[in-house]
Length: 151
Image (cartoon, rainbow, N blue to C red; front, side, top):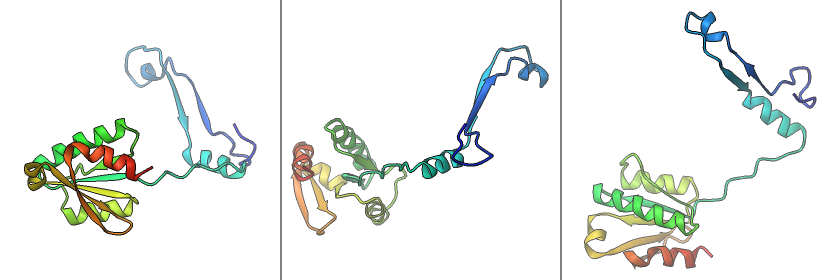
């Protein structure tokens, strides 16, 4: 309950519902449950001067250009995340253009491009989204390279 949002102050409620399933024609089953109102929670935060912290911009977006690239993108994201770098990759097999558009939308600082050519050469293209410059980096050094750039 909150007094900061007026007479409709219930934000979260719940309890035991031991006869609910039985009342609906099912077996007797002990149960508990709860319900919450997200809009009311947001009103409480606003009315009490609390702010929800803004999400930090994405460090790296990994664009997989084909099946092999998407698999490598998944692996690279896992590696980057384990080193503390925020990273995302495409889950929907979108076009390169769509992936770059999404990377810009979410504020990614760098985009790593991985396709069959990159996998064959063992070097990935890393694009700095702020100045549109690109560098080619050996696949095994990409995490280290990005960690240095994102310091």
